[in-house]
Image (tube, rainbow, N blue to C red; front, side, top):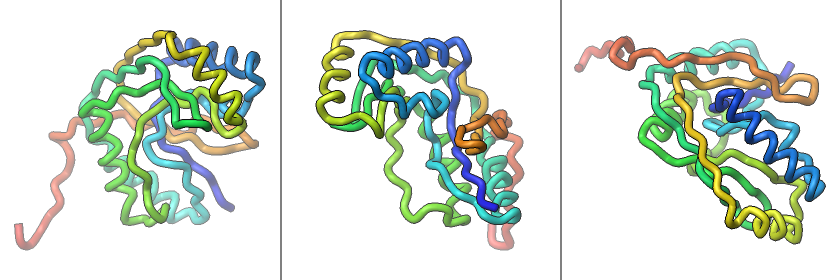
Length: 189
């Protein structure tokens, strides 16, 4: 049986409530609903289908290996878009976020789960997929002068599993001190 997993950062519930208020407003006013089917999140690794138990086991072991990281502060600031199709909250890039994404990508690379990973462009989607260009322009115009800023501490990342047509929290990886990461033994080092 195939399972679909998503590796992501999920803000604290108080920030998710603020984000959901914006997403609901956009959905009600502009009749776009696709983003409400997903939790408010920042994708660290795109959704992947895993068909075998041993691949799943390797996937979660690789993620555990990638969880040696220091906590960091993440800032969500203002609104932005991928023209004509996706409207989102800007996720400020910082050293902690970029390092975490790199570690996860590097840890999962040997499993060859995706052909080619797109360049990491962190964002938190508010509306996409069912947004047509004329509606996209209306949403962008409505939010062009609005301000938004929230920040939160990141000390873990999550894996969501697609179950019963919904993304559900499945596993959380709390950061471990990078200084305690076991060293790879080498005959030539």
